[in-house]
Image (cartoon, rainbow, N blue to C red; front, side, top):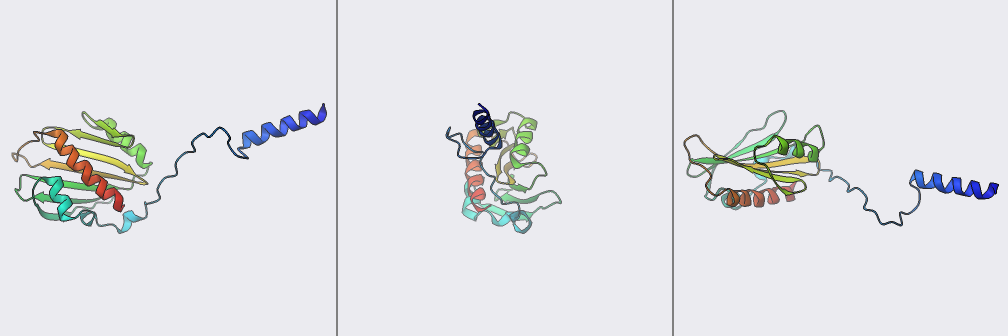
Length: 172
């Protein structure tokens, strides 16, 4: 009886310690892509080609302007018409990237999930798509200048921005 109790106790301790194989086949938590170091060296204006920018804007890109701050790396790209611009942002948040995206989604007006870590939001004069990419958050926006016009086909604009976002996340 004593040996049996000892074996049972050892089995319980091993199970609690997580030793051995997991025969249940439960999924292990996915490891986060380690790309936070890229943040220090990246030029956001160089993450998209002119053809990719043209596809996202719906017209030829105009001037590009880096707009980095202490908390984010950014690039503004004017559309050739001068009515709107594309804003690409890369952030290395102090909280996890997925948590930051969840926070931003809750703060956005009329946010819609695209997938588990990506959302979009559209209003009259702007559209945004944001995603968690490893340790980074990537956001692309199309914003009309005051009196420049308004977004008339939100789903199409979101689709173009989502395509650009995919191209950027493959490079980060």
